[in-house]
Image (cartoon, rainbow, N blue to C red; front, top):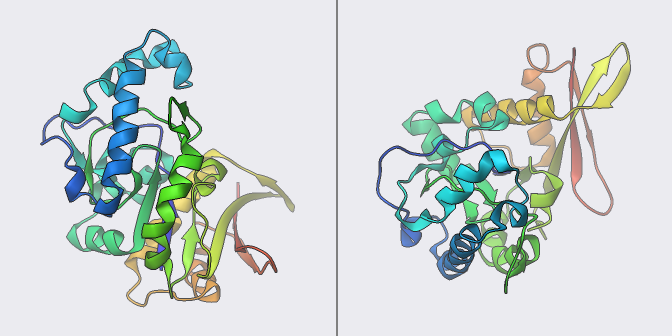
Length: 257
């Protein structure tokens, strides 16, 4: 099983720790690609129009400024650096050694800066979106699409991919041969189902943590749905699994009010 997660916009900047070591990150074959994006980010963040180029408001000028010292900033495990809703719900920052080891085998975080990460990989905090267009690199979605297949295709082979990414990050790599399950979340209110945003991230985080606790690892879309069914009655009110003829299976998790 390979669980794909988006990063979070919210990050906790490590107060101490060594700078990032590209050769120590998962998939060191991506080191050159990571270096190019990182160097471009440092240069872009030092320009007068950096906040506009990075698609952020004036309130985040401090985070953009921090990008300029990316290569010397302290780093820590990605599971503790990413602090958004999904990671908070998964309680990633407090995973014990067993959960971290399982996450290293079963989880990859898609990143505009690093491409694909294990939650155990040590990184600094940064501000960069996959939707960003960078000088000489182009859109990061297209950039990473050229690099990620070489490392993620073998990892997904003979496994089931559980996709909890947002659409922007999903566009950077799509499984080719592996069984693939896209996770959706809907709210049921008096029989009417609607799309949610904040709670969708929260529910995907709960699912991620639940799947990491399993001793028997799901290997098919049906196995993933069966595992998620254990959450019905606590975090979910229902779920459905629909097979699509062209594309991923669709696992819809239904939450209540």
